[in-house]
Structure formats: C-alpha cells, structure tokens
Amino acid sequence: MKYHYHSYMKLQRKELEEHKYYLSEREGRDIGWEATLINWVESGHAERFNKAYLQHLNQAERLAELEDIPNKLIHIVLEDGLE
Image 1: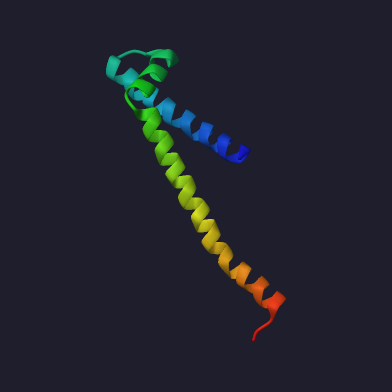
Image 2 (image 1 turned 135 degrees about the vertical axis):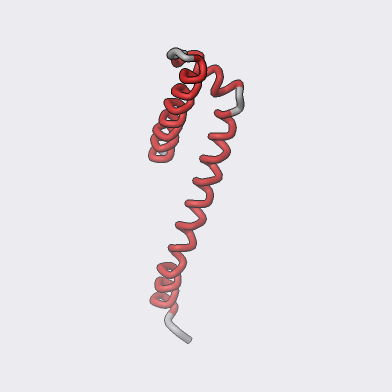
C-alpha cells in the first residue's frame, strides 16, 4: 500500500504543477500554491483525480489477477495431477 500512496502523491503533484501553470498563465502572474490548492479542491479536480486514480488502480489489480491465472493453473495441476 505504501507504493500506491507514493505513486498517488507523485502523480497528483505533477497534475497540481500543471494546474498551477495553467491558472498562472490565465492570470498573467504566478498565483502561488495556496491559490492553486484551493482551486484544485473547489473546482472538483481533486475529487476527479482521486476517482480516476482509484479506477486505474482497480483495473491494474484486476489485470494482475488475470495474468496470474496461468501460474495458478500450473500449481493446481502440479499439486493435484491430471485426471
């Protein structure tokens, strides 16, 4: 779980930096981190980011489970033998 938290924070930081850049460009000045974070939350970006990340994580975990099926079958065959 620690790995997921680190990946989540790293990716969100990248998204925040991009969000800050676009807001600052629109304002014609550096708006700073506090204004960026407030806008990130109030505009719904934080919630959408969280949902998208969790959806991606769930899909990745399901894919990993599917990729592990052949390994599970091999262990079943080796333990139980073929009938």
